[in-house]
Image 1 (spheres, one colour):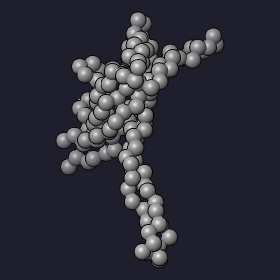
Image 2 (cartoon, rainbow, N blue to C red):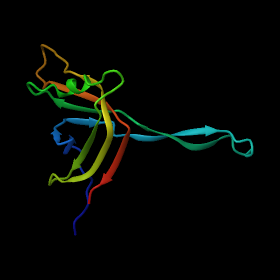
Image 3 (spheres, one colour):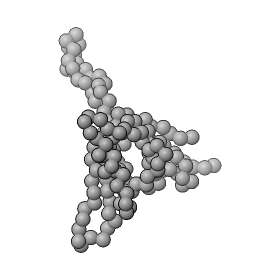
Image 4 (cartoon, rainbow, N blue to C red):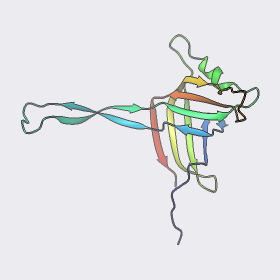
Length: 145
């Protein structure tokens, strides 16, 4: 009998369109419903009533090592002009030990809001890491079979 164990977080991939991009870290896969609180005069025993309000999606931050000659994030950020931007759907998959998706997040209509280059230090010997922060209009979560 096989046991189900929690899936480790170190094996994942991200892709938009036909392109797969390797990242060292992805954070911000968050969605929430903001509650609306109001007082209804017909219910004196309650001080307030709460109802679901707007759905909110946090920005997603993705980090990766810089590769020579690759500045796709800065190119994508430069498409933001005159209130128009190139939007992309992003698929983020958590993988099992066989590199098969176990859980998938589909990010809809994403666009870059911030690109950050590496911290340059003359005393450092770390890998140069860049990050991109994307805003989006929806996050769909699917458990894979």
